[in-house]
Image 1 (cartoon, helix red, strand yellow):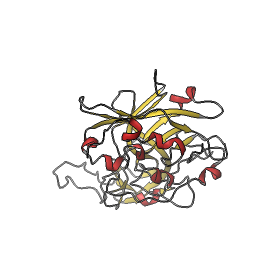
Image 2 (cartoon, helix red, strand yellow):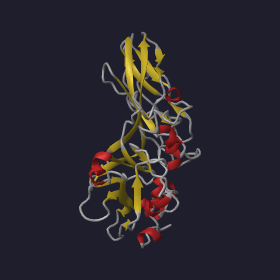
Image 3 (cartoon, helix red, strand yellow):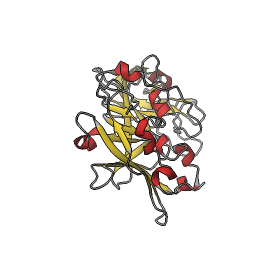
Length: 324
């Protein structure tokens, strides 16, 4: 049984051999908004009051383009993704958030791209002149929650830092290094399993979200083991998002040598009159690469081996949860 994987700490070069081609992230992509113009006004077009900038203070702009790079699989290559297997293996994420280390001031909006793919910068106004560093974190699309808790946790995947020397009455462009999926020691910021949105419905989560069933979806769920008490049961309410399961939730049930776990994937509707669709046994995930080396983080490939059994379809669930 061969599984395509994404990143590990022991044999990164071998894991990279399984990467798939780039995929275009279309209209279903994550929509982000931010103020991309110089601030300092007292209101916006909607009439919402904006904070005054005190005389002598400046602002910091983090350009979204400064947070992406090329060349290695650990470096984030673009925004507006973070959903499909092709997104993940191309190191595309959904968006980023920034916080000033010295003051804990958070940039008021997320950084990335808009629905049309145009760059959206992050801007923090009313900053006292001085030298600052920023911690920037990158996230995947969707939020997750444990068991039956409404999903509320954003999915961290990458991190970097920026710096800026702010002068009075001036906007300063921050100096940043690209977001990376690994730290200085080569370790991924998260460890576990990520089920991309490819597993929601036969045509993927973005297509499913547009159907009658998709609009009635409450959550989609990844669970192990497939019966009995759950060791891990993680949900996401966005069909075009992903499910991340931290290894701490399932490691006790993962076979030590094979590093394999069995999963069931469910689509659960808001309507109590419609039964949930849950895959039959057969969905298995192994946290190893093709050479047998252990991996900390696995992006589950919908086209590989037993993973076809993880896709929620009428065939894998024995039912029909797919109203057009």
